[in-house]
Length: 395
Image 1 (cartoon, helix red, strand yellow):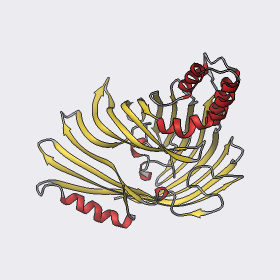
Image 2 (image 1 turned 90 degrees about the vertical axis):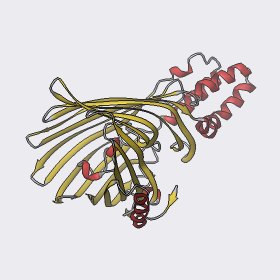
Image 3 (image 1 turned 45 degrees about the vertical axis):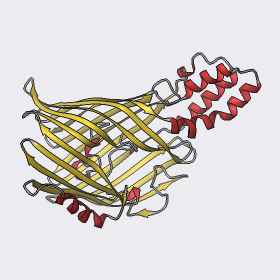
Image 4 (image 1 turned 90 degrees about the horizontal axis):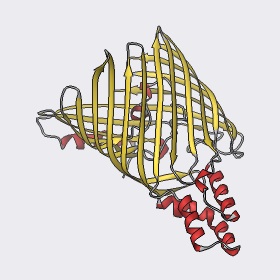
């Protein structure tokens, strides 16, 4: 990954554009957010990058430039270079793919895409596209596997006189993910990713849903998190009569590697007579492992006043306590150890209320002011507040 600063994005993209054939019709556009954020909490920082007691101009600021080229004969190429302050303005290619128009309704693409994990994931970072300063963290938490390499089919058509859009994707991802248990990054990957989502809508409403499934390459999580947390319990159990077979069975039940990750989302949106309503709920888990089921949602109500939008929302993130994955573990020490590790993964729940004000002071830019008040069940965090002000723009 290239380390540079956002002011160098333009030169990087220009060099990329030169690689397209001279006959290609090249379009350049982009988006940016420049935002100041202040966080206050009773303890630790509520999210990575949100530092208690500081006014930060870096964490939620970002820049992106995109080049798309029409190569003729229904073929096109797209690349998007993206840089955000949370990652010290490292530049990454979030989009880098070729597309072929199969028909007026269907497009086949191959390369790197933004992971369409939930309904707004593909344009989550384009602040101008939504009314929040940040999409509700309970749902849009900021997963490290935000891109996918693979193939996708995008479709648009009419169904029962309504507008329908679908996206089917197959691919893989390799990288690192952040563990809230050990407060560190560990190697992580996803193989045989299968994703499908769809939206059906009329003039003022839409409903949507989708799923994402993958076989996990999670040896890093097992070796760096799950098994180290289990080590003392396994040692104690062995000293108290646990056999090798018992320990191996226990470790298999605790393990994330080669297990299936499953993600689901559904919701609706309404834009009627200047009233705005948005709801989304998500559910995800690593099946048959020590990962707790994660369930979260947000509901927002907004009102448009010419160039101003006032929006309030409620969000909630919870983790289900279910020790069913330990079924068959008979040794009491191993059973207690498994529950303890599970509880460590399930230590975080949070909810809160937010209010946002958006003012479109320019055809391509919006000023946003946002206040959020939340409560985190982790004793190290507790109650927290986030205030932010900034500008989202497209160009």
